[in-house]
Length: 111
Image (cartoon, rainbow, N blue to C red; front, side):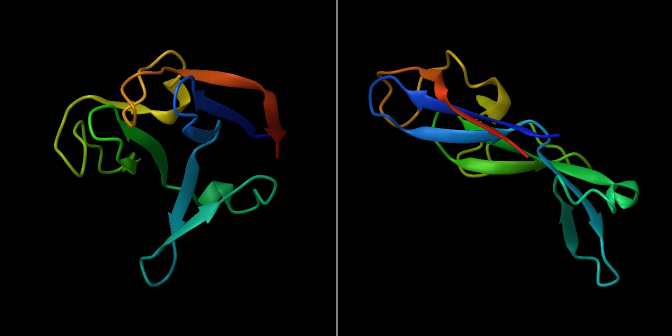
């Protein structure tokens, strides 16, 4: 089961949806990533990696970090001030630099 959490900036209302299971994948015959999402978990045993959504807290760039090729810097500005979207609660919004991300208690999804 995967759970969605919505983080919303208290100032500019920028929102980011975060899923608890990130993006598990396997490589097909052509070497292309094939993602396995809940509830279609039959191929989970073939998964070799996970793409985890991240946010740069300096420039606001949203990007994936591959568990098989991890990075510790933003792919756009090369800042080390990056965070998994699962951990945004309380962080300063990089878009407006005035508000902080808070969990939206009225937005809840389960898959």
